[in-house]
Amino acid sequence: MRRYASAAVFCAATAAAMQLRVQTAVGSRFLDKKADLDVEDDATIADVKRLLEARFPGAPPASVQRLFFGSRLLRDDEAAASIAEDDEDEDEDDAGAAAA
Picture 1: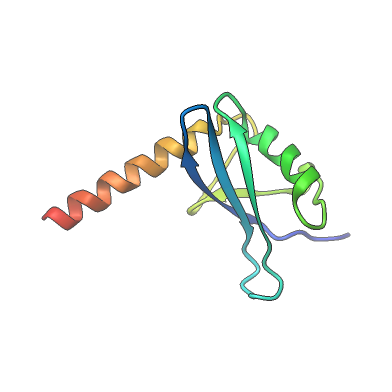
Picture 2 (picture 1 turned 90 degrees about the vertical axis):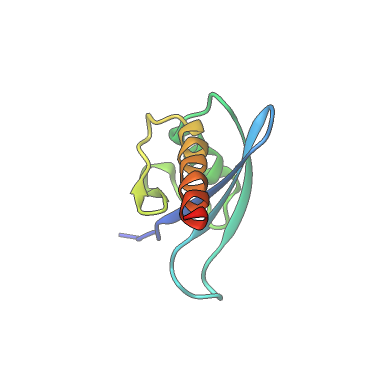
C-alpha cells in the first residue's frame, strides 16, 4: 500500500476567494512539495482535497489525504472558510500577547 504524507494548510483570505498554500510535512527540503490554490468562500475541505488531487505534484487521491491547520485535523465536511477564522483568532492572540 502506498502511503502519502500529511499536508499542512496556510491561508490568506481575499474579497472573493481564499488563497491556500498546501505543503507536505515530510521534513525534507528535497521531498516536501507546495501548491497554492484559489478556493471559493463556500468550498469545503473535501473540495480542497479534490483540487489537490488535480493540481498537487504526484496527484494524491483525495481519499488518502489528511489536511491539517496547525495541529488540527480538518474534516471533509468542514467549510474552508473556517481556516481563515482560525487564522484571524491566532493573529488576535499574538497581538494580545505582544501588547502585554
